[in-house]
Length: 533
Ligand SMILES: Nc1ncnc2c1ncn2[C@@H]1O[C@H](COP(=O)(O)OP(=O)(O)O)[C@@H](O)[C@H]1O
Ligand SMILES: O=P(O)(O)OC[C@H]1O[C@](O)(COP(=O)(O)O)[C@@H](O)[C@@H]1O
Ligand SMILES: [Mg+2]
Image (cartoon, rainbow, N blue to C red; front, top):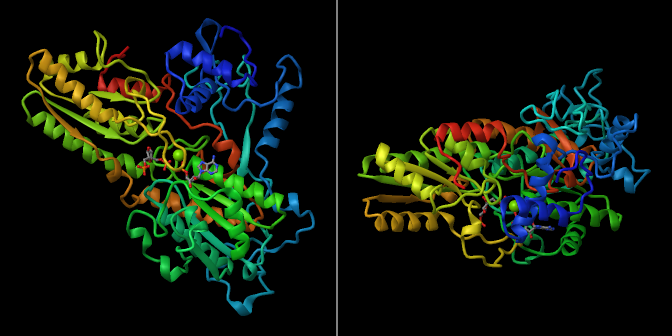
């Protein structure tokens, strides 16, 4: 790919081909989305200059057009425009909000009809408030981390919508039936978000709040009962990990879910989950629009993998990294105390290595960090095993941290998927453990290999303080978004501010570690590992 200007609408076949060519990875659905992403992230242009185009317009933009910037901005504005109830119901009426910064108590029944606090200043967010999505001006495409839109790396402001309470609301609190559902795998902080959504709904004056048990499955399984929620019920739920409501993968189709919403009279749906859940939430939103029913569907991104686009981080990630430290510490102690000890820790990360990278970096005890984004060999002169031999000979012990999605090309392929359709991965941790044992045996070198798989321990715990606060703000903003009349949106932290995004924009592909980033380089300088290829 030696063209200078990158056409944003390259078809995926071409993208895939390029990726294949560079890294020799094979074609599976798992690789497919990664492929897409990586190419969005690092196009090689002439002179080894990379042009980042993650935020490039979907439409072709001619950079020779003197007005290209305005066109880009227009296109960007359209892409990040938040779907609103009035798109379907142009005459939907709004009223003065029952929430404001001058009041704290839940609205009482007899207060209805007179929501106005009577104050001039109520601390609302204007629909025209924006958050700057990219805050660094890269003067050249060669500048580290440059995310240039055009080959000249010109500055183009990219604004997203600011989250928060609006002056006018599109739902009468007494007419709201709100539901919360948590889908996919667990993540620290789920209960904190549920708690905050309930508390904020009550402050608006909502009295009918329910939890849908066990993810989307709870919409179709007749045995599963709605869980009534109130401040009293959720008051202390954040003190434990997991989800009060339970989670699941798989479940009913979108039309069945929307049938169920109609039957139950739910008009606000808060969906806590990852990319799969958000794809579902967006499909539910679309179906509601199609059926012309007034429902606000709001997502809150949940993933310890931190693989949602455009956000500083997702809740639970920090906690998971912190928890992973314990496993790494144990592996280090075991390896260090054994004669020729080798500790291997497998961490989560289906397609992105953020947990493994950050945990390795934070611990300072990892010698080898392996992530899905960076291909590696186990065997051969540049392989991981030969480096482990060197470490054993030179310092007596070694600790390896491997993300579950790393090195899948080294394992037997299966076409197995989980009930949500996610590819089932081979166990790279066990494989590395076995290969390490064999390798040292064959080379007649003593090695004491200790394998630790803390997978579920790092996500079943309760949120740490910083994630707890993140969850609080996200949960509140989810409710503000629903009352503001938005639907098909999700909420995230963006340059330390909170923003609403159309769901489609944050799940178009998983966010990945950029192998050319300074952060990955920092990780490598910390471990001291060479390239294993
Ligand atoms: N493309 C999709 N469209 C609609 N629903 C989906 C889609 N992908 C996943 N789901 C549903 O979302 C839920 C969670 O998905 P999953 O991939 O397991 O977790 P996560 O949301 O954490 O990525 C499941 O109930 C699954 O059926
Ligand atoms: O064993 P489970 O429950 O399917 O979860 C395993 C998966 O959960 C994750 O931690 C997060 O995945 P989700 O975001 O899809 O929940 C993945 O890294 C991992 O593959
Ligand atoms: Mg997922």
